[in-house]
Length: 116
Image (cartoon, rainbow, N blue to C red; front, side):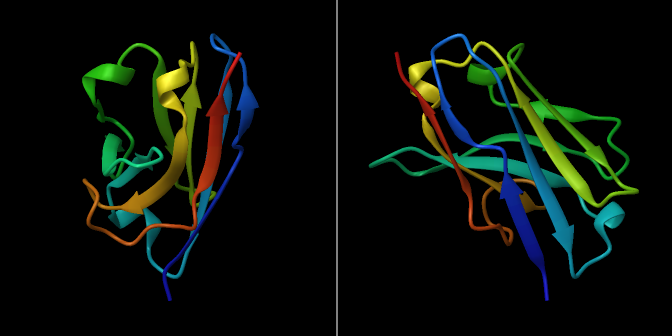
């Protein structure tokens, strides 16, 4: 059974930073590209970043480029998202997901709230 468990969310002020983690189990982690997706209140699920199986190639939605960094540690079956220069509009529930995009299995999510 695929399990993805996110952690690291919280409340921060604009300009602050958070590091999200996602521990994966139930599948061979290093055989899959992984993604971070988010859902803001009242909005659709949004893909924000993906990373290839080896971790060599990250991809980002334009709105987070230069602020967010996706990475992975295949030895620890863990996916990360370093989020810097957070903005109010980054407020959402963040999920890690298998594969690229929003369609794959995802975890229960971790809440990120950016407010002054």
